[in-house]
Length: 321
Image (cartoon, rainbow, N blue to C red; front, side, top):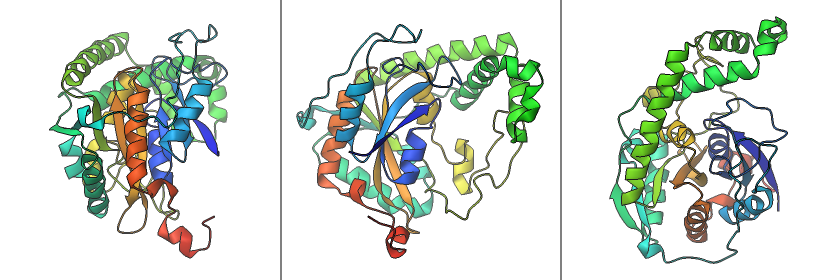
């Protein structure tokens, strides 16, 4: 069973999984120890598996989850994977973020419609949901900037930050030390409001469904940062078309929102754009309810084969195994 281990602060498991056509699981904050991993934002960093299937993600998560006194953020909990066992999906309430599905790039819309139809065909209950009108992306950026620069404070103040090859990282780390305490505390207060809003949402539904990204994966010959502006760590990638409004070059608000709230998320391959580039949908659930995400993801992958497919261009080039 091939797998990889990723780290996510605000999208670095789910986003690459969608772009590469694999299944990626972001666990609840604190479920998997971060000891030995490089920190970026202490209150948001998470470690999780990237695999072929939801079933494989459950197997790997069982092996890596658990208490660890070496990680101050450890939740002190383990995870037991229910191998092959399903649940009555007719009792599962899925809240779909209609606004995000409507905002996806035109080349991704056919596949996204098919993904929604496939999940609905499982017999789940269906409810339209919207995230609260909070400054989610701005709050996530503020916390990551402040905590990230604090992690590397010695590097910055010693001047060794100038040795970094990427000038964008140099600027981002330096400016992060200038985040006012009032801004950081305000962000943390809004974060608490977001957590309370999620508690209300999960009183109505069991799982949230949204595109993982609004854009298909970029082509191999397309610049990852076609336009860059200083002002935050790594700068600002300006996305294509309508996805620019979401921030982060095509991310959806559920990515930073789920990370701020410490919620588990699962990205599932759901096909290819009309140009043959990978796409993914994400499931997000209550804290420590990874089993619900894996169960729904496993059911979806029972009636679809996208997790076993390769991009058409890769097949044509003879690179598919």
